[in-house]
View 1 (cartoon, one colour):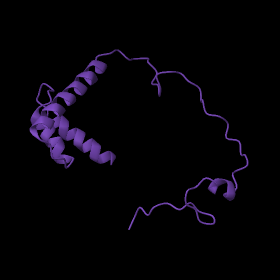
View 2 (spheres, rainbow, N blue to C red; view 1 turned 120 degrees about the vertical axis):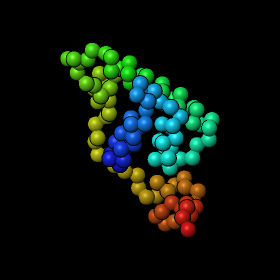
View 3 (cartoon, rainbow, N blue to C red; view 1 turned 135 degrees about the vertical axis):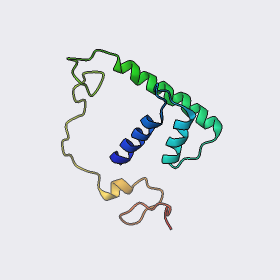
Length: 114
């Protein structure tokens, strides 16, 4: 999967104009690689969206980030999860108490696969 994404990104970069502009040709090539069929309206919309994304990345690339620590989240939050303390579980009878359809020890649900 990682290789496929890298390959598609590489093809995207190769298919961009020399000035880094995203064109409808670029979007058509990405759609072809992704096995998507897009109409002209979709191609125009994606061309604009991809161009906006590339512009945002270009803006980030112009920032001076030497000495800035990478972060995993915008806010410096500690772990907000509760402790995982074992406690007593529901009995089978309690778990099935409000089930609309049940067997002796199982929930009965509609068949989802044939």
